[in-house]
Image 1: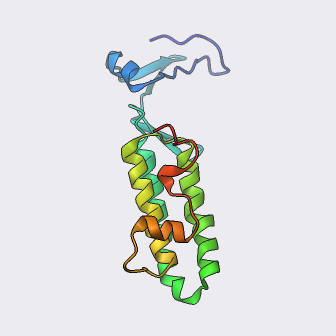
Image 2 (image 1 turned 60 degrees about the vertical axis):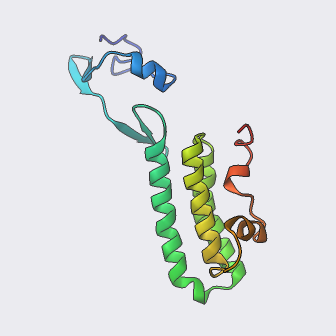
Length: 156
């Protein structure tokens, strides 16, 4: 592949639109740019979003879930010292902000279920593991909108 001279470095960015486009492309190990072979990465992280080469965003969802579960475990350790209102504030600011950010880029049923599971887990921690209630009832009791029912995902 050759680069067209558009930027300071003499290269042009090429972004495929879907995984269908990627599967039709020939296998390439790198792109020759300004006389240097630049290898193609399996995934990149930009603005906190992990994008892999086939665009399903499963790596991004895994990173969001891993970070969220880390903070849920931390919240679990200090939950006994917090009031219900304080626990809700921490959960919303730390975990829900990550879910909302993920909501803006993830539109896949499998990934959405994983993110809903994160929300269910943090809700159980906030309400001190309310037994006898389903995850949906716990989320509603906190007046949180379930992840699968949030704006932007209503087209499912």
